[in-house]
Image (tube, rainbow, N blue to C red):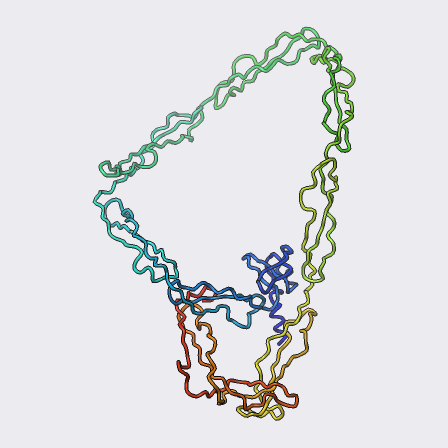
Length: 564
């Protein structure tokens, strides 16, 4: 049986689930997750039963710890502002399974003096009629209750009035189109530059919009004319036309007089669809003269330019330059002359400049160390240094984080320590030696109760302490008639219906039994005696005021969905 309960506790760990936000600890008292590790599969997160996770809904859940109640919330405000109501408090069950005590909502009576007299506000004006012409319309007016929800009797009656509002005006007639006419003939017999078109028409007269109503009828939407291209016609013949003459070609000699040739093509347009070809020659020539080549020669050097920077860059130098041009004269391009020999730029190092500021740069991330935990999932830390390069000469330090984390998975279940179950009910109070019934006898007996160590798994620790059983000496006084005395009122209990309906709670006068005829200790060990069971107290006539008081539980709110 214990093995079965352990499996039930660990069942959520064996089920595959979605990726969740995993936390190292779950606070059972507050129902909150602490120390986020990162996003992992729920199965991996819950290798440690003390962990918690947050799934899509956003509510933090425990991985495997046995269930426990959260602290009670503070008592709520009284459910009414005037008269008798109730106040409530709640708690939640966190962990695996169901908490032993199912009481998660408690209700007790309360009383408030008044609801400050607020009620209905004045009626708002009538709304416009729901129709603007013909009949069958309605109009409405409303009023609001200014009293809070806790004062339901402050506003009695309806919050809305409705009445008919016929209209004597005639409704407008909106225009409608007639059918389209037949298509006209195409505007041409063949397709030239523009494609011929054809048209058809319609009129806004089926019906025509009214002009003697208020408002007037609306005109027909859309156009009264529609046209389309006659794309099925053949293309018109196109006669050929000469294109422009090309630029003259190269001169036929490198120096002196020669000839240059130009051509043209019949493509503006090219003849198509049976059109005529171009008339006339397709080539022509002109006389040309070609110059002889001229070699280049350097001009003088320019003055030195500014230094390349106002400071000396790290590992580099600041330089200045000067230039000269091959323009005294420049080499001819057609025919090409020889260019100047040598460099056109000269460079010199700038001295006496300060060093430039060097901003810091991140080095490589360190390797992640071994997983810091031996079971479940843990958090590994990697860091980097601002030394590639380090900031120098007033440069900026590195921007960003100098450490990062990664979730590691041991794929090993954490030990699940055992937890004691609740003590069982006390066994019947019997004679310690012969086991006979001693009810209503002044003979001492003995009774015991048991508990079990539950939930232990994966080599977890056994429950602390060794006591699986507990025993005590007793007198069995259950349902026995014992003289006593009236000794005040019992404590008020809770409302029997914590939500969803009116009820009442009761308390009774307490008849305290007189055990003075019983020995206070039992046995050779002189152990203190316990009186087991509920006796029938014999306390004589009822005291003044009766034996019972009743208190109503009124105006109890409806049950929340989770409790309904």
